[in-house]
Image 1: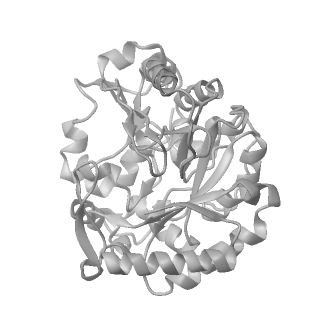
Image 2: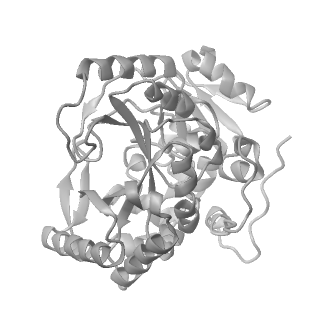
Image 3: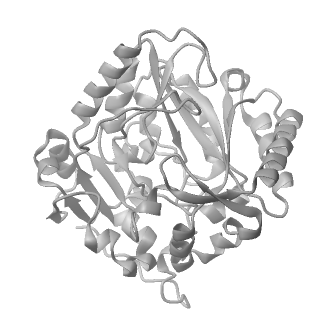
Length: 394
């Protein structure tokens, strides 16, 4: 039986339980043996599922059965659809439980629309994702902006259909004949646009199945960004056909904004292990948050990358630079569970409204401010980590 949650620290205020507990993330715990991380105490700290919402079709699928077998005794509530569950997405009382819901709630669904979208920036194509939502709680994440007041992981159990769609799409493209910023030779497919594949792998084999798929596709490679080091992924034998992008930012920013993620130094330290395990390893400098001292702290981070990464990692590394994008609705949600984050994220005087590709109305740094910041960051990279090729900046 799963033990009940610990009481809030003495002196905590109503609604602060999750935030105080999560800021206590142990940054020095020794990693568990390879291959057993998903069953470790560290993994359970990230995801300790105590309730499941599921579409009937998802429950009946082989992948759904596999997931439930790992969750004996966990209550399951059947729902007609995974996208709009009133007790989760329409309940503003969930704001105070924002991170707790991410820890304890899992949704199983079926992805009905299997479409691969052209991208041409970070990747050539955006694959139909095998998940939506995340157990981590980054304060700037764009995924919950359309989901209301809760954003736990939704796992799609029809992974066989997703894989078959991707296999057909890759074959239809044929060989890549012209290099571009995504890759000089392979078609790149982002397989984790709306989730984190490293965390998904704590629950099921969707990530493993997609890595195995691209291992057998010589004209394409998978790509996903992550803020979580999952040692189990080292055993998946990607053979150079999966690009993992470790998202990094100054540790001070990460401690404030990247709630429940692996500490930045540990993400950087994992790069060589993942390269040696057969992954291509890139970095996302993301998001770049403009606040007093940001240039100094980014210079320190870049010098740290230069100091600790071995030559073999540097030789193949590239980076994406992504400036902060925010959203008024998410700003208001954050004020309910993590208002300190909004001290650095929400600055209307320096931000302007812009409609994103997906139709969402967001705020980004004003054009001139953003251009100047990107120029300064490029100069910092050249001065402190000149080997780090910037593949894409946005």
